[in-house]
Length: 443
Image (cartoon, rainbow, N blue to C red; front, side, top):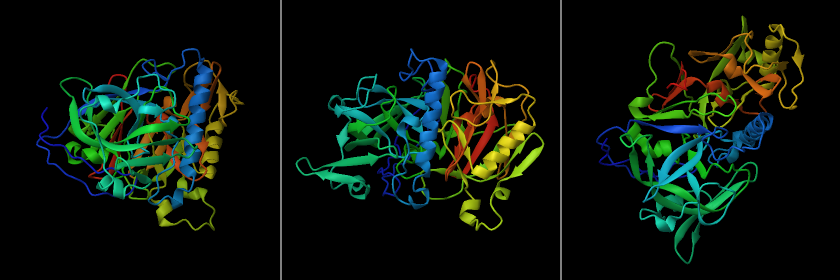
């Protein structure tokens, strides 16, 4: 594959910047590996932790992230979206710099800025070697006068070196501070498929603290804002990317796949497609959830609001975010409890308390998934997505399994457990998300 030129963007967090555009002679069609942070391939996995401890941490990260999305949601506007960086559950492998250094970072559709830990560093614990920009011939710090620096929020100028610094504060008080720079990023699963992006603007973090996992070096921003890696790749991938997430089943050995360009097109029998709704902040991919069917009981999303409530069109359209970094699915409180009631009424088993004390509806089971459970279908606008038990229940202990839903404080989120074993394709030119049932372990 040849790329004569690549689209390179002046990066920001959520505000639009002036882009430097290069024409692409051929579309970049390739795929890369994603690893669940609790898989055997991940440096984050605690080999001494038992399965209940792993699930407890996984669920707690999901709750932390969901709460963080809810903070000042309607007043975010052009501010940096507050997310919990540690809560990203899938790690993306890429190569950074010259010579290329293998790097794992959180693949996050709810974030824009791509940043990694750099030496010299006051850093959170990272098992892989920390990136040394002084050893890369393609690393270049951005000047104070560059458009990246003057337009980015929360930047400052180093008076002595005249270079640009950034600062990101996350919702749990985790943070990253460092230099804005350009660097070469290489993506691709095989030598034949490798694609080099020669001058991507990144954050090189020299002071990073908080609830970050040891397996990740930072964050890869895959959101819809002007800052994200997806936007920087631009027309080279024709605005298309997809992923197929291998479901969480204990200590997984299979990697997941992420595709770009023509390889990301989702077609064939069983595809369900729904519009992406333009909303603020642009980082997030907003969809419209119209209802949920449990067995033969259809629950309408808008029936959950009190009749006196003034439900604006802005809330009706784009009322749920699809997110790769959140495990559970979060629903409006009234709809959530209606789903709980509907599932409970159609189960023959008697509910038990969650031994972890985190989820509401649980049953006794030694199996990975419950067999005799009602089918749950999410009705997005124009797309009915039928979920399997592996999407709707999670095993919390050796003898308990729980419904993988939770009430949302403000923001509804369609999490990655519900997306597992679906090929999920984003077409940012057509502004759609498509779902196709797929065995992701074989994809």
